[in-house]
Length: 56
Image (cartoon, rainbow, N blue to C red; front, side):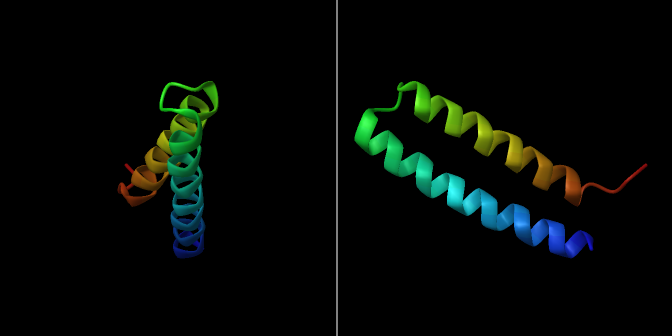
């Protein structure tokens, strides 16, 4: 199950990253849409990192 969730997070990260690059090239890096996508990407990367952490 954990492996499945990790795979989904990795896929989601790639999709968001692609959207972020496209949006930034079209609207500029300081556009609110770019900032929102960047924050979303950050949250997914953090979730992926947490999934790699051993539970205490």
